[in-house]
Amino acid sequence: MIILAERKRLTMPVRTVLKAAVPALVALAVAGCVSIGGGKIPDTLVTLTPAASAPAGALLTASADSAIIVFDPETDRRLSVQRIAVQVDDANVAYLEEALWIERPARLMRGLLAETIRARGTRLVFENADSAATGRSRLAGRLLDMGYDARAGAAVVRYDGVLETAGSGISTRRFEARVPTASADPAVIGPALNQAANDVAQQVADWVG
Image 1 (cartoon, rainbow, N blue to C red):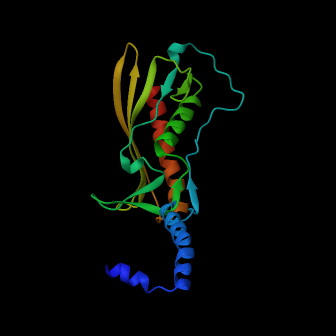
Image 2: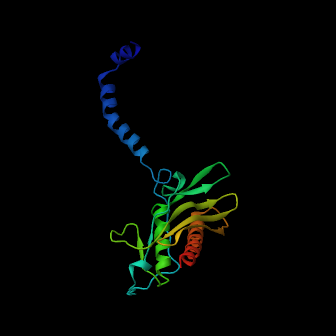
Image 3: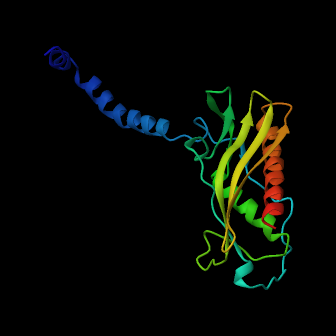
Protein backbone atom coordinates (compact mmCIF):
# COMPACT_ATOMS: atom_id res chain seq x y z
CA MET A 1 0.00 0.00 0.00
CA ILE A 2 2.82 2.38 0.73
CA ILE A 3 4.35 1.68 -2.66
CA LEU A 4 1.03 2.33 -4.40
CA ALA A 5 0.58 5.58 -2.55
CA GLU A 6 4.04 6.73 -3.53
CA ARG A 7 3.41 5.88 -7.17
CA LYS A 8 0.32 8.11 -7.24
CA ARG A 9 2.45 11.11 -6.27
CA LEU A 10 4.72 10.75 -9.31
CA THR A 11 4.20 13.46 -11.87
CA MET A 12 3.97 12.59 -15.57
CA PRO A 13 7.46 13.91 -16.46
CA VAL A 14 9.06 11.77 -13.75
CA ARG A 15 7.17 8.71 -14.97
CA THR A 16 8.41 9.39 -18.47
CA VAL A 17 12.01 9.69 -17.30
CA LEU A 18 11.79 6.43 -15.36
CA LYS A 19 10.24 4.62 -18.30
CA ALA A 20 13.03 5.78 -20.59
CA ALA A 21 15.71 4.83 -18.03
CA VAL A 22 14.57 1.21 -17.57
CA PRO A 23 15.98 -0.13 -20.88
CA ALA A 24 19.31 1.55 -20.19
CA LEU A 25 19.47 0.06 -16.70
CA VAL A 26 18.67 -3.41 -18.06
CA ALA A 27 21.37 -3.05 -20.72
CA LEU A 28 23.91 -2.09 -18.06
CA ALA A 29 22.91 -5.07 -15.92
CA VAL A 30 23.31 -7.48 -18.84
CA ALA A 31 26.67 -5.96 -19.79
CA GLY A 32 27.83 -6.40 -16.21
CA CYS A 33 27.09 -10.14 -16.40
CA VAL A 34 29.27 -10.67 -19.48
CA SER A 35 32.93 -10.36 -18.59
CA ILE A 36 36.27 -11.81 -19.64
CA GLY A 37 39.06 -12.00 -17.09
CA GLY A 38 37.40 -9.74 -14.54
CA GLY A 39 35.22 -7.50 -16.69
CA LYS A 40 37.49 -6.48 -19.55
CA ILE A 41 39.33 -8.00 -22.46
CA PRO A 42 42.68 -9.21 -21.07
CA ASP A 43 45.94 -7.69 -22.19
CA THR A 44 47.50 -11.13 -22.73
CA LEU A 45 46.29 -14.37 -24.34
CA VAL A 46 48.56 -17.30 -23.46
CA THR A 47 49.12 -20.39 -25.59
CA LEU A 48 51.57 -23.30 -25.77
CA THR A 49 54.08 -23.44 -28.62
CA PRO A 50 55.94 -26.73 -29.23
CA ALA A 51 59.70 -26.52 -28.80
CA ALA A 52 59.92 -29.37 -31.33
CA SER A 53 57.59 -29.67 -34.29
CA ALA A 54 57.31 -31.93 -37.33
CA PRO A 55 58.64 -30.12 -40.44
CA ALA A 56 56.24 -29.11 -43.18
CA GLY A 57 56.00 -31.69 -45.94
CA ALA A 58 57.33 -34.50 -43.75
CA LEU A 59 55.80 -37.84 -44.69
CA LEU A 60 55.64 -40.76 -42.30
CA THR A 61 54.25 -44.10 -43.39
CA ALA A 62 53.82 -46.75 -40.76
CA SER A 63 51.44 -49.50 -39.75
CA ALA A 64 48.41 -48.81 -37.61
CA ASP A 65 50.01 -50.95 -34.91
CA SER A 66 52.66 -48.29 -34.36
CA ALA A 67 50.15 -45.42 -34.11
CA ILE A 68 49.32 -43.66 -30.87
CA ILE A 69 46.16 -41.72 -30.05
CA VAL A 70 46.54 -38.76 -27.69
CA PHE A 71 43.45 -37.79 -25.70
CA ASP A 72 42.49 -34.67 -23.78
CA PRO A 73 43.69 -35.09 -20.20
CA GLU A 74 41.07 -34.84 -17.50
CA THR A 75 41.13 -31.82 -15.20
CA ASP A 76 39.37 -30.59 -12.10
CA ARG A 77 37.13 -27.53 -12.27
CA ARG A 78 40.02 -25.25 -11.37
CA LEU A 79 41.61 -25.98 -14.77
CA SER A 80 38.42 -26.44 -16.79
CA VAL A 81 38.23 -22.73 -17.64
CA GLN A 82 40.44 -20.44 -19.72
CA ARG A 83 41.59 -18.38 -16.75
CA ILE A 84 45.11 -19.00 -15.46
CA ALA A 85 45.05 -20.54 -12.00
CA VAL A 86 47.16 -19.15 -9.16
CA GLN A 87 47.71 -21.32 -6.09
CA VAL A 88 47.78 -18.77 -3.29
CA ASP A 89 48.20 -21.24 -0.43
CA ASP A 90 47.28 -24.84 0.35
CA ALA A 91 43.56 -24.09 0.39
CA ASN A 92 42.98 -21.03 -1.80
CA VAL A 93 43.07 -20.55 -5.57
CA ALA A 94 42.82 -17.28 -7.49
CA TYR A 95 43.15 -16.34 -11.17
CA LEU A 96 45.33 -13.88 -13.04
CA GLU A 97 43.27 -10.82 -13.90
CA GLU A 98 45.13 -9.66 -17.01
CA ALA A 99 45.60 -12.92 -18.92
CA LEU A 100 43.64 -15.85 -20.32
CA TRP A 101 44.53 -19.12 -21.97
CA ILE A 102 43.64 -18.92 -25.63
CA GLU A 103 42.00 -22.36 -25.25
CA ARG A 104 41.17 -24.68 -22.39
CA PRO A 105 44.37 -25.97 -20.73
CA ALA A 106 43.50 -29.63 -21.39
CA ARG A 107 43.13 -29.08 -25.13
CA LEU A 108 46.32 -27.02 -25.30
CA MET A 109 48.23 -29.76 -23.48
CA ARG A 110 46.83 -32.47 -25.72
CA GLY A 111 48.00 -30.61 -28.82
CA LEU A 112 51.45 -30.02 -27.34
CA LEU A 113 51.87 -33.68 -26.37
CA ALA A 114 50.74 -34.89 -29.80
CA GLU A 115 53.04 -32.51 -31.70
CA THR A 116 56.05 -33.29 -29.49
CA ILE A 117 55.61 -37.04 -30.04
CA ARG A 118 54.97 -36.47 -33.76
CA ALA A 119 58.19 -34.48 -34.06
CA ARG A 120 60.19 -37.58 -33.15
CA GLY A 121 59.18 -38.99 -36.56
CA THR A 122 58.99 -42.57 -35.33
CA ARG A 123 55.26 -43.23 -35.12
CA LEU A 124 51.91 -42.05 -36.41
CA VAL A 125 50.16 -39.71 -34.01
CA PHE A 126 46.44 -39.01 -33.89
CA GLU A 127 44.42 -36.83 -31.56
CA ASN A 128 41.04 -37.77 -30.14
CA ALA A 129 39.40 -35.26 -32.48
CA ASP A 130 40.52 -37.33 -35.50
CA SER A 131 37.52 -39.39 -36.64
CA ALA A 132 39.73 -41.98 -38.38
CA ALA A 133 42.14 -42.40 -35.46
CA THR A 134 43.21 -46.00 -34.90
CA GLY A 135 46.14 -47.55 -33.14
CA ARG A 136 47.31 -49.97 -30.52
CA SER A 137 48.55 -47.29 -28.11
CA ARG A 138 46.40 -44.74 -26.31
CA LEU A 139 47.76 -41.87 -24.21
CA ALA A 140 45.32 -40.37 -21.74
CA GLY A 141 45.74 -39.06 -18.21
CA ARG A 142 45.02 -36.15 -15.93
CA LEU A 143 46.39 -32.61 -15.96
CA LEU A 144 46.87 -31.93 -12.27
CA ASP A 145 48.33 -28.45 -12.54
CA MET A 146 49.13 -25.86 -15.18
CA GLY A 147 49.38 -22.49 -13.52
CA TYR A 148 51.32 -20.26 -11.17
CA ASP A 149 52.35 -21.29 -7.66
CA ALA A 150 52.53 -18.05 -5.68
CA ARG A 151 54.04 -19.84 -2.69
CA ALA A 152 57.11 -20.95 -4.67
CA GLY A 153 57.12 -18.16 -7.24
CA ALA A 154 57.10 -20.64 -10.11
CA ALA A 155 55.09 -21.77 -13.12
CA VAL A 156 54.08 -25.40 -12.57
CA VAL A 157 52.87 -28.12 -14.95
CA ARG A 158 52.02 -31.53 -13.49
CA TYR A 159 50.60 -34.38 -15.58
CA ASP A 160 49.66 -37.98 -14.77
CA GLY A 161 50.06 -40.01 -17.95
CA VAL A 162 48.17 -43.24 -18.60
CA LEU A 163 49.55 -45.30 -21.50
CA GLU A 164 47.51 -48.23 -22.73
CA THR A 165 49.12 -50.54 -25.28
CA ALA A 166 47.44 -53.62 -26.73
CA GLY A 167 49.25 -56.71 -25.51
CA SER A 168 51.30 -54.78 -22.97
CA GLY A 169 48.67 -53.59 -20.52
CA ILE A 170 48.46 -50.18 -18.87
CA SER A 171 51.26 -48.13 -17.33
CA THR A 172 51.15 -44.81 -15.51
CA ARG A 173 53.70 -42.16 -14.65
CA ARG A 174 53.66 -38.68 -13.14
CA PHE A 175 55.53 -35.85 -14.86
CA GLU A 176 56.28 -32.41 -13.47
CA ALA A 177 58.22 -29.29 -14.41
CA ARG A 178 58.73 -26.02 -12.54
CA VAL A 179 60.11 -22.78 -13.93
CA PRO A 180 60.88 -20.02 -11.37
CA THR A 181 59.57 -16.58 -12.26
CA ALA A 182 60.70 -13.15 -11.12
CA SER A 183 57.15 -11.85 -10.75
CA ALA A 184 53.47 -12.65 -11.23
CA ASP A 185 53.33 -10.49 -14.35
CA PRO A 186 51.45 -12.36 -17.14
CA ALA A 187 54.23 -11.33 -19.55
CA VAL A 188 56.59 -13.39 -17.39
CA ILE A 189 54.27 -16.24 -16.39
CA GLY A 190 53.15 -17.02 -19.95
CA PRO A 191 56.61 -17.95 -21.30
CA ALA A 192 57.41 -19.79 -18.06
CA LEU A 193 54.28 -21.93 -18.42
CA ASN A 194 55.16 -22.66 -22.03
CA GLN A 195 58.66 -23.75 -21.01
CA ALA A 196 57.34 -25.98 -18.22
CA ALA A 197 54.70 -27.56 -20.48
CA ASN A 198 57.32 -28.31 -23.15
CA ASP A 199 59.55 -29.89 -20.52
CA VAL A 200 56.69 -32.21 -19.50
CA ALA A 201 55.84 -32.97 -23.13
CA GLN A 202 59.44 -33.98 -23.84
CA GLN A 203 59.42 -36.27 -20.80
CA VAL A 204 56.20 -37.89 -21.99
CA ALA A 205 57.56 -38.31 -25.54
CA ASP A 206 60.61 -40.11 -24.11
CA TRP A 207 58.30 -42.35 -22.09
CA VAL A 208 56.03 -43.42 -24.95
CA GLY A 209 58.97 -43.89 -27.29
